[in-house]
Length: 434
Image: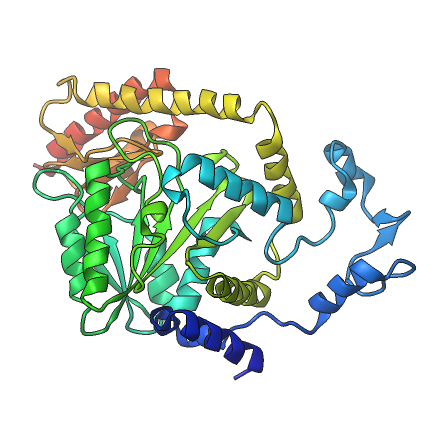
């Protein structure tokens, strides 16, 4: 094992042996090179005032070489903020700005100790880093039965972890905190679990209420007290899009100093929060009361980044930073929030109107981009195909009964036609099935 990896492991084990036990084999072996091209280039950038022949970019006229046909479309930006490599951890100013934003939007983080967000290539990359650092073959990854399918690829297929599901809703159609607790306590024999908390939930658009949030935190605490080391990951992809009776901040704040056996990790990003899906700018943030622990985890994270993508795209980081610094940012974001909220409320009004009879029910939703219908007498795939072939309408079939509808991408005046057509397709499919 590389001495740098050994040194990081010694630090982590000294600061919290439980967190060291959470690391995967790869997590123990990974490190960020202190010597090599990046470190020598950083030293040269600070000291080589005459000629700097270290890094693999081209210069011209004292600035990064570029094509006019590209720069003409980016003339508002300095070439140094577009064409150079971004640091593996991300643009420092962006990391600082995102941390400030996190503190403002998550009051529970006040007084908590957590690291500087590390820039990732959107949220999937952040989740992949978590999988690499903490998931080994056979480790349990606990998720609700309504979940994003990419978890299976990221943790199951790539890392060999075992996906453990519990029902998202209980019989009262509230968040099933007792199911989460049971799934966690079932891992006592293994002594380790990775929990993914995705709110607002994809595919249902559900975020727990404050009381349910307290229950979730208590379930994780109970598991830790029972001897389970818990990597508690908040997948906050749709953060901020909270429309009614729900938590309005990430559970990361409540988990940050919960228990020595709990490592809180926040995955978030500009992707959906700031409506820049193609920019691929995300963040991974760790919580710990130990600065040495935070530094060691960051170094291992940078090792993963260096070994996979080297660093994230610089232009999109610059674009997001510019937005966060703009005095118009808050007002423009609030405007888009109202549009999204109005769409969600319109969907709920339509579904509660009684006009669709008893052909479906719907899972509780109060946030995010999506909602899910539960079809009563026809298969979701049959309806999905009919909507596509006969009406040129796209939806997502999940399992036998669930049909996911992304109201986020449907203008409010068109929502009535959308659901009327889905209802028509369900009725037609039911007739064909007889």
